[in-house]
Length: 113
Length: 115
Image 1 (tube, helix red, strand yellow):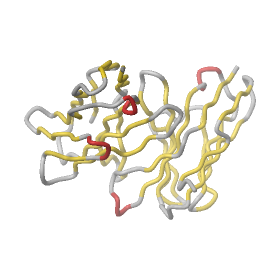
Image 2 (cartoon, each protein chain N blue to C red; image 1 turned 90 degrees about the vertical axis):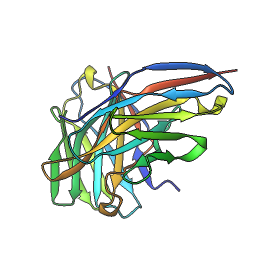
Image 3 (spheres, rainbow over the protein chains, first blue to last red; image 1 turned 30 degrees about the vertical axis):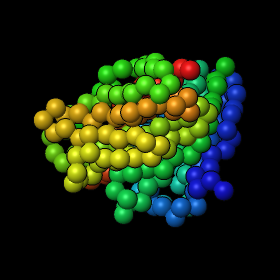
Image 4 (tube, rainbow over the protein chains, first blue to last red; image 1 turned 180 degrees about the vertical axis):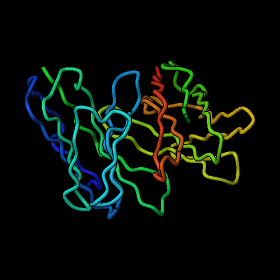
């Protein structure tokens, strides 16, 4: 079984709809991250959380919100989806003892029409 | 600001040929460097990392990278590639910003291995 899972794996939605992407992990890590990947742009950090009560904005947080429901769960919401949020979204986790190393989920491909 | 530059967006190569994927970083303090690989339709997987010690780092699948402080580089190499190495490769630097440890990624290099 995968240590970091993301649901759904693929989603097509319409402009203006609210959508939630979910991430769960069984690694027991405190730290969780949301990235988006666009062709030619690499990965950009949206939000990150170092424990259940800690939420921080990344470099591209506008238009997104997050919820850390438990140590193992970190959700990303698009309150009103727009076409330029079409991208591949990754969740990642890390542990203080591993320093900077992060472990990634399989990704969610989101298309906003 | 700390950043990572991957000098080639695409690298085509024939099977069994050597390959080098180039990565330069900017950092004024301690450097922690990573290479991740993304196979088609998958998440990112760690290939190798440099935290300290020997400047030549060996990773999985026969890849290695050399940390060069004077050149601020961390190029990834493999002496003989396979078709299965076709993937996108990301270089990343670990930074501490506002007391938080994060990774900053390069834009990626797509390696295509042709028969």
